Image (cartoon, rainbow, N blue to C red; front, top):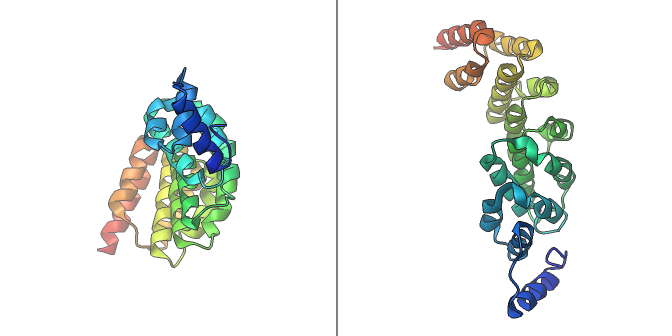
Length: 231
C-alpha cells in the first residue's frame, strides 16, 4: 500500500506504520517508504537496488516526472547502465503521460537519454517534431546521447530547421552518433551539413567527434576548415 495510486491511502499507511514503530527491513522497503513520502533524494541514494519500486511508481499519476528524474540520477551514479534496462519500457510508456505540466515529459525523455538504451529511439523520434520547442531540442540532445544511427535521418531534417537551437542540437547529435557508432551515414550527413555552409558551433562539434579517434580525423579537419571559412 506504500505505492497505492491514491495519495491519501499512501499517507495513511505511512502514518500507521510509523505510529506502530515499523522500520524498513531492507533496501526495497526503505525505497517504498521514501517514495510514499516523496523523498526522492533518499531514493536516488539507494541506487540500483531501488529500481523495482521506482519502476512501479512510474505508473502513479502525479509522480512520473519525479520518478523519471530519480531514474536519471540513478543512471548517473551506476557504472553499468545496462543494469537499468528494466526501466526502459516503463519509461517509454510514461512518455504518453498524463503529466501535471507538459514540460514534465522532458524529464522522462532525459531519463531515457541517461540510460542510453537504443530501444528508446523509435518512440523518441516523433517527439523531434513535437509541438513544444523545448521538447524538440531536448529530444535531439537525448538522441545524440543514445548514439543510435537510426536517428540520423530524422536528425538531419531537424538540423536544417530554421530554429537555430534545434538545428544546432540536431547537428551535435549527428556528430555524437558518428563518433560513437562510426556510422558512415552519420559522417555523410555531417559532411552535407558542412557543405551547405551552415553556422555551427565549431568547438563543440569538434569535441563531439574526438572520441572516434582516427576514423574522425578527416571530419575534424573538415569542421575546422568549414569554421575557418565562415570567419
